[in-house]
Amino acid sequence: MGNLKLFTLILSLMLSVTAFAKEYHVSVKGNDANNGSESSPFKTITKAVEYAYSGDVITVHEGTYREWINPIRGGDSDTERIVFRAAPGEKAKIKGSEIIAGWKKLENGVWKVEIPNSFFGDYNPYKDSINGDWFGRMGRVHHTGEVFLNGKSFWEKSSLDEVINPKPVENSRYAEGSTYTWYCENNSEITTIWANFHKYNPNKELVEISTRWTCFYPTKKGIDYLTIKGFEISQAATQWGAPTAHQVGMIATHWNKGWIIEDNQILNSRCSGITLGKEKSSGHNVWSADRSIDGSIHYIECTFNTLRIGWDKKNVGSHIVRNNEISECQQTGICGSMGAAFSVVENNYIHDIHYKRQFNGAEMAGIKFHAAIDATIRNNRFHNCNIGLWLDWMAQGTRVSSNLFHDNDLDLFLEVNHGPTIVDNNIMISNRSIATCSQGGAFVNNLIGGRVHEWADGRFTPYHLPHSTQVAALSTIYSGDDRYYNNIFIGVGDETGRKDETDYGSARYNDAKLPVFFADNIYYHGSKPCAADKNHKRSDTFNPAVKLVEAQDGAYLHLQLNDEFFKNKGEIITSAKLGKAKVPGTAFENPDGTPIVFNKDILGRIRTNGNVIAGPFNTIDKGTVTIKVW
Image (tube, rainbow, N blue to C red; front, side):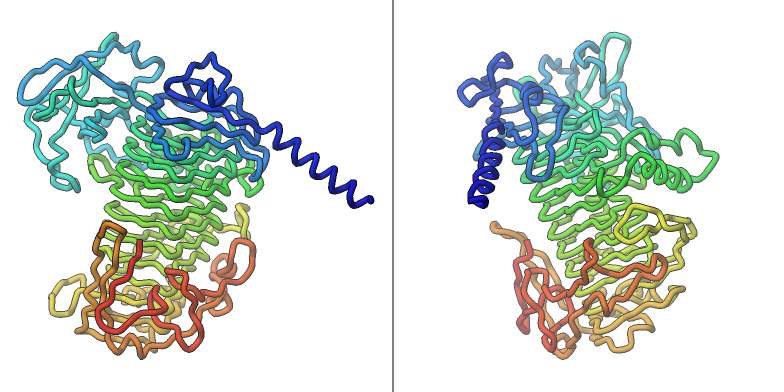
């Protein structure tokens, strides 16, 4: 009887929680004076924010919402969230832009519009310029605003003449599109924009300009456990997100915990799409303000400042970013300094990042994380990025697994980390696959089709207690202490006569200062092993002819493998085999401290001892094969 009473009490409590959870509806046909029910929806998401408490759902119906959502409350736990979602089967767009009409024609496809400064309220992106630590202006001003024609962004120019007489940007990935240009000037009352629309009449097309600095960002901390699901989010006038700065992308978590960002299309951010980043009080562009000491010292100070304000697993990070398409952002698809720790980033399609090449700097990539402690980055696709994935400072316990990298300037950059960092089951087939001035890495069962560079670095950077943000000490990068097991390296062929042919393979590790560990790797088509790789297989003249082919139902990898591949039988790699990263003295293991057995391939198929072959595919046929990889 006692058990029955207890069961009844628990059931009653569960039902009471369910009863209090509410769903609020938002529609472009609604009214903010309504009650938010399905039959009487609000007009703005901002209005629904006022009503939502932990456990509630805000359902946004089809239409375009031009507003900045500033959540004022979060959920109480992972199971009691506040959920922002697009209505199932409906296209809900959140934009950081406004439609602009009233353009006046000048010459050569150039039109002009004059906008009262009052239109912009307290933020005018055509007066604000991109700036911050490690930002490269390339000799000119870059405003945070942009101009869009039917959803495509224009190239900003520094003079009206460059708009009237546009020339293709040669180092851009889209030279023809780069002739669609704009320029702006301001006075105390008016902002004037000139734009070259070529054959289009802007008064008959959809022309928008960025007007808001973000789309979804809480100004307060403590807004935890939010879900953002199913939206198209675009066209915000975001600012440069240096690791020493307040990082605000179109979606920005602002030093909070436990967000889920999933199933969204995120595009056309002036700088970053999503930021899981640092807040302002621990430092904001401190190196730009004080150049008397090196930027790395400033970032060390910022790291300790974040610890003083509660940077730990209990308070910050542990986000999930999954199943999003992120594109056409000019700094990063996703970035985060400190705030990406303990997070999972998976199944995202990240492409066309930093494609305009109008500015530069040290913070641009498909994903750029600092201090991605115990973060997992898996099953993502990166292409047409300057760098696919850049892990900078304090990538400890980070795992990069089963990702597809292609057609990037560089696939993976590991900068001044001490490890342990795991890179397994990835396909990296850009011209440059890996650049590392880090140590304590494990590279297991990868396909590496581009150049590999490894070098030392004299900067002192932190390493941490295991599975913690607490700093253990600082060290320079000696170089080495990396492990390479069961990888396939592909070169460009000795017959090419290229001077950089020794950059393909692992030969650069001949200069490493710390010991390195190699076994059961295969070297094809002129790629070179390092001296430490004693039991490798090598076939200099054989070309696997790796090629990625797009089809209507996905992306397929074409390659061919010879007998050397099938003769090479390695062993299943485990945490015990990998040992510990030398400097932090920490094991290559899961975030919960349990050991890893690398017994699955990129497609989830099981490896068994005696049947372990090099590369990310456990089962593969002889001859030319075609494998769906995305």
